Image 1 (cartoon, rainbow, N blue to C red):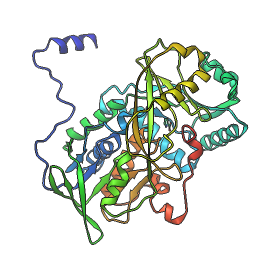
Image 2 (image 1 turned 90 degrees about the horizontal axis):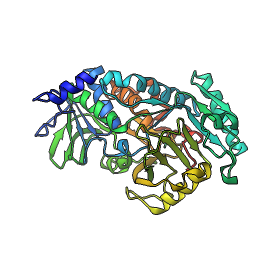
Image 3 (image 1 turned 180 degrees about the vertical axis):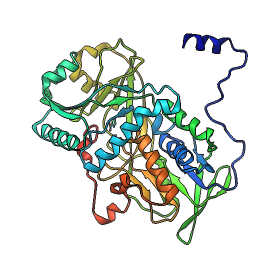
Length: 413
Ligand code: PYC
């Protein structure tokens, strides 16, 4: 490694190509247009090209790759869900994650930490037990543990939480992990670009032509392209895009904020989540505490940050870790979360032929990036719904067959 680095540093011409090509012009026609160059859109484009031989694909983004929720989340990866459909889906994602760095030949800083969802009330303990049993039944490693195990894994925690919310137990999920979020978008972007996919940044979709119930083309700020298939993977912008094809969804958009502390020496190995205190936290490879809370309590399409959020989250962090009282917050930011009534995503075909949705990712989308790419590329390429996403169809809301995952959301919303 040292030799490689030295050779690279001394080379007169840098042999590394750019991560992805940026074509000058938008083409006139594509087999598939993907709206949204976040992890999900790029992953779908990557697997469309790699697994299905569909290479005439354009990925369009009004901003830059990974600039939406891919680059704004707190990077937690887990599969300890509540419904059998959710567990099977996210478990497949965790398996894909584990091979992704090798697949890309790119370091994603994937780090398995173990994930504790703390229970502060009897009813939370019951839900954790329920999740543990569903997980075990489906071969996913989860178990209910007592407070002493939480203390062993995280000696700096105050189990009493300042007397506000004593910890009664936790759901421990050994495969829980974190990863470098930008690198995931770059890895998928590079792999897709190498296979002929075009990535067009700063190219906003302004309209979608639908004739006789099927997609015909896409209007953008850089011209019109004709296509018979459009995949919408735009996180908090979903209602704006579905409006263009006349589809209604029950998705509503709330901001979700996060923040990081100044770097510290490593002291927090696992990922901790507290539903009652509305906190999730892990320590990154850089030593920063990466922290988030629940959604902002009002529907608004904005990525502004608020002091309210910082104060509220800091107070709850101090309940668990009073020794942090002198640690500074370095940055804060927000994303826009596509919330659904049952806290499960909306994926697959829609009433408009050729228009596919990868949406409703609320506060749970990053971990699903690889499996979304796999299942959506299959669905778009074959026009058949992938088995793993049947429970997430848009039509479930008409059939009143919801996939209730609220009890497995990272914090109470
Ligand atoms: O679903 O694990 C999760 C999560 C963590 C932060 C926000 N959501």
